[in-house]
Image: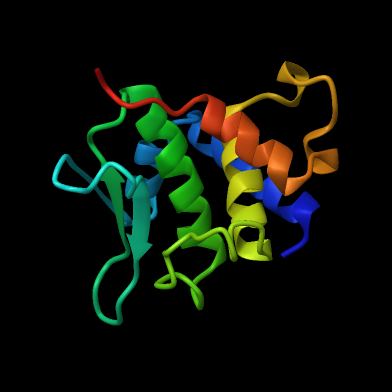
Length: 142
């Protein structure tokens, strides 16, 4: 999917459902979101899709609520955009900058933020910059 279409999808979801909350949007799409403190701290979130079962997003409950929104928005991007690649959820230094990660990051930033929050257009942001915006908003609960 083209970057402008991903941005438009996120903005349309915000407008059509009158929310930026990815937990609410996941529910609208029949995607189950589970928040669990049983995950290791380095496993922030992942998405599972299996035939004959609803898609599930797992969020690490050790992160603050604001962080959980960011993580859920990113995973919702994967769930909506990447049906074929969804179960390859191990992000490593080798695949962190692949197209699917860029698309999920672009979706999350477009869903959670207004373009006016930045001094440049979201579509002009590199994956590195999109990831920095998201990572800046992720913190572990104290």
